Figure 1 (spheres, rainbow over the protein chains, first blue to last red):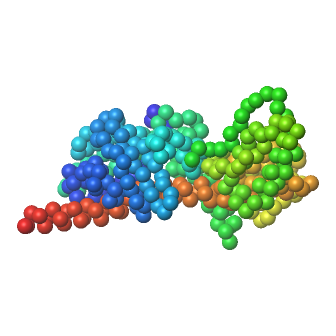
Figure 2 (tube, rainbow over the protein chains, first blue to last red):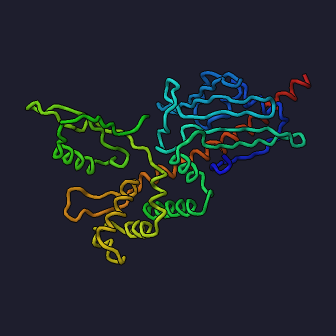
Figure 3 (cartoon, helix red, strand yellow):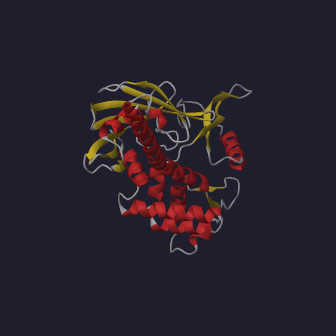
Length: 164
Length: 173
């Protein structure tokens, strides 16, 4: 398990932990920050293990659907869920943009009290993924090993060259 | 959206190669060809012969794994660098390498499958050229994925400020 590519994002918010927890779990507050520059519509939010969070992100005539299944809910310190792209009927589908993107990402969010502020740590790990999906995720998130990083640099250089 | 080409495996039905070729040539000329891939289904010709024929287009999602596997090889990276200067035939690509033409062709097929290059089907020398759009799409999409969360966190920062202010206001009132 430990050798699976993991992506980590950490941010300290200047607010008490209970308040930060509320913004992640309250269906009124979630759409006010989740999904910037799009209209975020929460179709369902069942905050319990096995519960679903169904979210639609709309921009113009386009919609993107995400299906989240909570696996662990420990207020106010820990949320774990399985994250996937879905169709409008909430069936899990491959990423519309990337053939080998892992269909399910195990997402863990921890909320840690830091002298009145809150440290939020978000990690993603491919869940029950194929070799190709794991490789794709590793390549995408970069820095997993030097080979992928070099590939990304080359891509960026080639693109820059082609656009001039 | 589900991808991509749907093949229906049925026996004793000939491929209409000429039709597929004509159609793929048409596809190669179309402006948004980088984004699209043929969708083939069984159809009937006038003489009631059943053939596979193109029935539409489907979006082809970038296959990042194949792209990076293709980029892992130094020869293929050199080929891409060469093609960044302009299209070239197999012979022209092979010239600077101590490599047979079939070996270069093999590398080109890997690059083609990854969607990094395309080759003309209708010309004798089949020049290869870089395909920027699938690469750009993949790179952009990844940027967006990372952006999604960092921008969301920026929004959350602002929301928490607002919430703290309104709580303080309520406490005063």
